[in-house]
Image 1: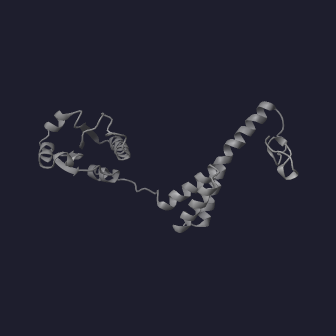
Image 2: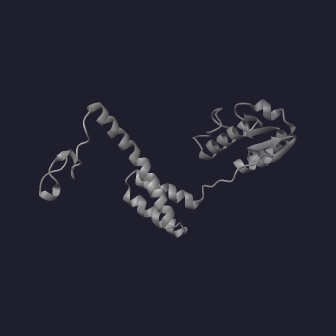
Image 3: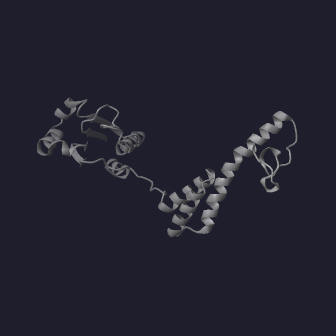
Length: 196
């Protein structure tokens, strides 16, 4: 199958920008790249860069004559217009090409679990509280949130343990006993300063 995309006029040939970078175009470009990796031949034409391709297609000329540029983008395959006026989703492209698309597991609940892990990784207390509350609204269990927190903490701790091991190796000294305050200074509780 060969799928042809006829884009509206764009300022450049990248296919990701009109007057400015458009997230929808970036997403569509990634979807077309995915389609190519599935073995589908894809041709993409920009009206301002390749007008001859538009003039050479009777389907495209007819659509432009009837609707003007409002019909663009046009998605054409096997002598038929499959889609027009807006960019299709990856799921739709897969359907056009007869491909199986694995359903996404990235649900709202998964998004909140990822955000909870990110909050742990970045030490962001307000972020954690917000995403904890959002996860609860979605019915996410505390057990699942605990798994997300533990995984994030394990990922966060791994580099710290690794660099400590490297430092110990280079210094060839046993690990010093951890102080309750950085740098071994007096703790704030005793009235002293911590970290200068």
